[in-house]
Image (tube, rainbow, N blue to C red; front, side, top):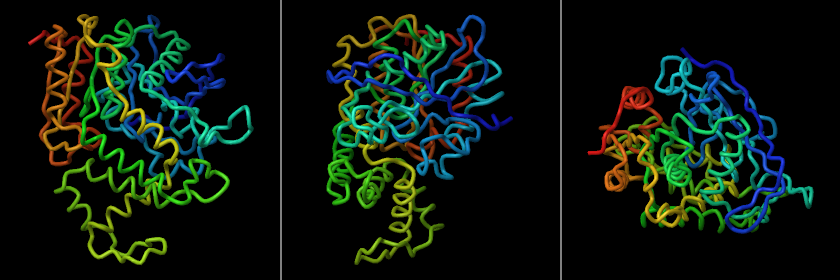
Length: 380
């Protein structure tokens, strides 16, 4: 049964928020959505961390979010994890109260570069401060406190969201009982740093980027299109990419470029870039990308999981993933085992690559249900 129509809510932090960089945000707003009912003990809450360019809208149908237009395109209307959240689904809203929060620095209603700077009355743009992974986690804990939730039943996340779920569990171990990272890691790899740097250069080299102060002028569309094309090839397997490309129209407007698209693959990749440019802010992309490239769990806590023995982990790998390779999940499991933290490890066999955790609920849901229920994972 689907969730149906939902509405984004907004939490306003009523005090300045200190960032890890030493800077301070005087005003912080977090956009979030909830599904299901919080029980009287406030013990059935599950926090879902979205991926790099996701939003608070994880399930149901949300036609519009105030202040987000025109980024809230048709692609955003249905929740990005709608097949996983709802009555009888993996995150069963008959049992659990599910929360998803848009990251600080993003562009779907939470305070970010598009937001008005109270000191100038204009969008922050280049003046928006550096955001860290811990800043995002701490800001979300402020919202949980507001809701009266002191310990989560579970923290769940895919890709970058999985990294944040692990950070929450390691840095604030008393705040969560179960942790489910999907296709994730606990450090940024060399290949990820290279690919992320390529995307940063693509955006910053767009003449319309104007050092991030483009809100009164032309949007750096070419840069964000190129950035998305660089990243998209890591989200799907080459087999799936080729199949999808055969369904795309060859003739795409290259915005005055002399080069003519000559293959379905080129058309498909350019189409993906254009779609993304319509729904995501370039400055926010750079800020969240910066969160990823500077993520280091060992820098936060050298012994990582030393206080996590009471937690239970379910770690998912995807055998065809070339964004977060399976070796990265092996490393998480080895660290958990060394700390004697209960962990279950599942390898999903899929030809869909990294995006499998978004597209194939049947491969994940039985294990997630077990982990969220009374399934006990003992150290291997």
